[in-house]
Length: 281
Image 1 (cartoon, rainbow, N blue to C red):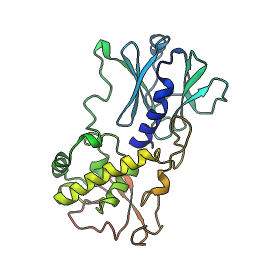
Image 2 (image 1 turned 180 degrees about the horizontal axis):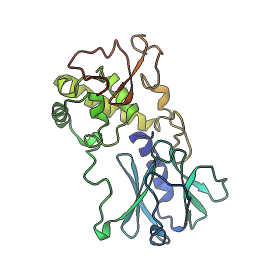
Image 3 (image 1 turned 60 degrees about the vertical axis):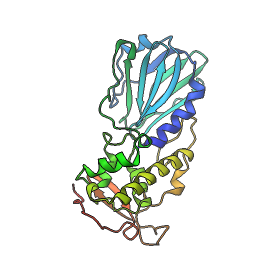
């Protein structure tokens, strides 16, 4: 699933090429998405221009010149790219914004877990996720991060994936940050020492910034807004490396499930030390 670095890469790719582009028409497939398109949006958007792009958590937010917003979630396999109108239409394309300059903004999603939402800020409409998302990882300082960890009895891996605590963190970067901080993913969040918590805060921010600089992680279908793959998959220490030797100690990377999510770790570098939550929790 595209996580914060991948979504940020798409936004950075599209921002300079979409700014000022005018929507001439919109084509929508008849296959349902997790966040379904509503027919009444089309006439409201035709003739409008894109004035800015930004990211919130794992959402791509396109701002139009009438103060409305369009949020696109990539789900697990979503792609959002600019094409010349003459480019072949790939299968599983669900949305095409025809731009007046002859290009198209296309949304493709093989598994259809993503989708589109629209809201009007001028009419005081709020984003659908308003109130549900926590701060971005770099918006929370180490002291607040530590305090929030101390309030949770869950596994630290589950806490990192809770979007109400931190927005945008997913499975890949939670595993990688925990490895970098040398913390067993199943340890209870409130059992971490202050030193461990500070180390995790620093590791998470470092990993995310490195991943953004590498254009994200391409494991299956992810590409950025220009169709380019990410490169951070070549720098992964534990995620997706089950059975392979740890880059630090040569122990075999192991995989388990914590709170229903696949979790990768090194049993030596991330030895269990504090209170441990059941792997099924």
